[in-house]
Amino acid sequence: MYTIYHIPGKKIGVTRNINKRVTEQQGYAPDEYEVLLTSDDINYVSDMEIELQKSYGYKVDRQSYKNLINKNNKMKINATEQTSTFPCPLNKLKGRLMDNLDLSWETSHGNFKVTKETIQWILSNARTSMYDANRCYVYNKAFANSFSDLPADAASRFELIRQWAHVRGIYDKGDSNTQYVKLMEEAGELAKALLNKDKPEVIDAIGDMIVVLTNLAALENLNVEDCIDSAYKVIAKRKGKMINGTFVKQTL
Image 1 (cartoon, rainbow, N blue to C red):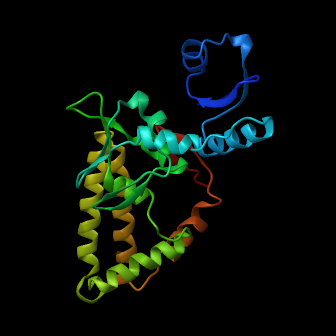
Image 2: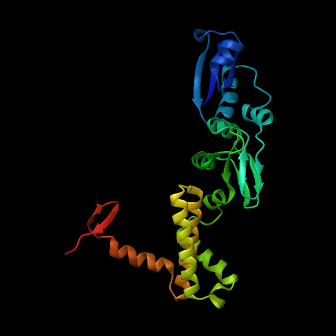
Image 3: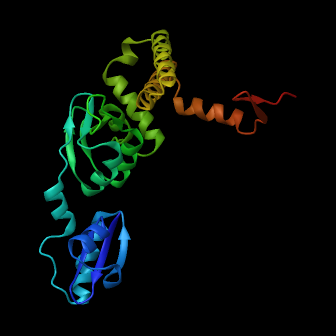
């Protein structure tokens, strides 16, 4: 969390640790300064610091807080084919990411960027390195799957899958039986991921199964969207109850 503080007659500044910055380092007691605002958005805080310095008539900083922080605290992310590793422990990761908003890095799965949206995903999926407790990492493929440049609507996603399959000859040279075998293989991968509580692999397996189902439907001269709609029409008004973790439909 960033704090904009005001020392009357002296200055307006930004800090992430007001006691250390203002009281310990600058020597001002709590009753000698005031907090103007707090936020976890470094861009907003940086802009507001300059605006408040102007409105209070203080000297405006030559360099914005976010640029100063990024210059002095730019995080070096180590990207391999499989993972992106952050140079900090899990309990410090959020602060480091917030300090490095808009930082981008290249991976074999595309160009990644630190944004408010990706920070939430990273924090939910990061793991401590088994080699160094002061480092943590995420899987690149899972990150790419969650933040791809695909269109937002599901119909467009399915169409892109069909285009991808057509270009690779799956519809010309493949068959439904082969796709069914592939579906069972992916179901096995999903089972393994669930047993291991491996969320990135769960995401990967579910995504792969949806791709296979899309192609299987196409090979049967069907659109997977129509199959989903048909299933939903059946279950929409279905009544029943949960028994041992499974929804059991009501029988007449």
